[in-house]
Amino acid sequence: MKVWIALLRGINVSAQKIIKMEDLRKAFTSLHYKDVSTYIQSGNVVFAAGVTKSEDLRKVIEKKLIKTFGFEIPVIVRGVQEIVEVIKRDPFKGVILKDKEKIYVTFLSHSPTRIAKEELMGVIDPIDEISFAGSEVYLRCRSGYAKTLFSNTFIEKKLGVVATTRNWATVNKLLEIGNTTLKSR
Image (tube, rainbow, N blue to C red):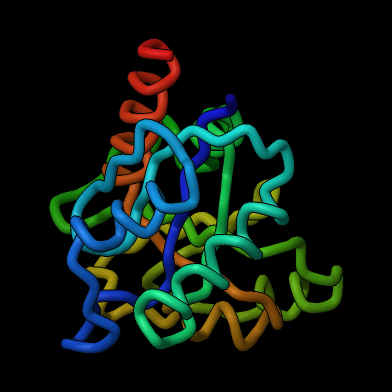
């Protein structure tokens, strides 16, 4: 079985699409996934499954979530090794962050077109900066994510893909949980 990380978009934000983590774990367990664990309330699920394609998992999970909770929830799935690669590709590694600065990763459902990428990279923000690597957009946010031009919704609209954003600490914690799950198998 492979260890996967499902990133749900837009749950438990602004009192919308509220899901208790216990209920989310039960939904994943009912799909016969193993070692299901969640991390914080923003929809991060680590689990083991015999399925070998993230796209197959995404479809099954999204169908189960709409059946269980009654609303659509976009899901992006990555394997633990893919998260290792996300961390390795960090374009801001070595940069010393100032007080309020943080790094975020926006996970994309699929690679956008070259034209869409160029359009997004052409957006100039005097405060924050972005970089592409793989199927992710990395954001160095200097004034807090709530104030950035490069919000999840903005990136989705510019690129024409589904996206979900996590802060750097969460990405690293998900890798830690994924590695622990791998070792316990």
